[in-house]
Image (cartoon, rainbow, N blue to C red):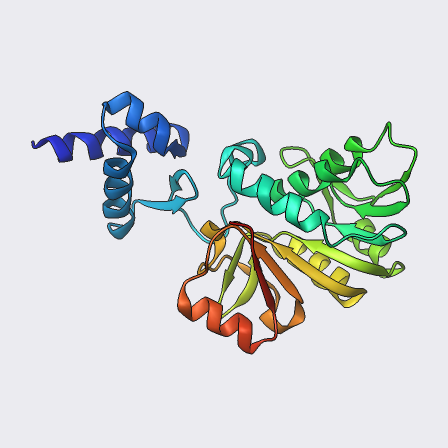
Length: 255
């Protein structure tokens, strides 16, 4: 077995055991450059064993499998922070906004502590808890069935909450975006609630790191032209970029 094959075997075993690997950690473990690890990950992705992400990779699984929240929190964390900071620049004092659940939406919410006149509605327990000590932000947590591993709420009660509310802006965070399917989610219930919020919002701003672009998961949230702005950290591939521009979506790249 050659040196390259031994590295790839190590990567396979690591991702099989944990479901996620980091380029920097693998480079340290194997005493090679990060560029070498990226080439190995690219080869393994072509073999269908994994899916590359910003800063690492995750095990390739079915379209309906959602990686755990705490795993996703570590993936592309720097990119998500930059996206969250850029998204905050679209806010105005006095806005009433809906903030999605998800790890990128969580990074966005962390940027809002300096605002003093906002109303935020969210199905995320993690996000709502950020504003407990901030008297300037009125926070409404949608009711519903608690998804304990996600720290979010879903179901009929959640849907009823959003049926009666309307927003200046919706900060959307979905699992994937593709030319063919638009924005998609792992779980049907999540997709339906997000679609409802979009229909009740004057403007929808999607927050997605580049690893989610060009992919499709289980259930459609909305078509590309139902959003107004996409904030991401890297240039989308040409086919995705062209489809977004033809759908009149503004692409805001943080880097």
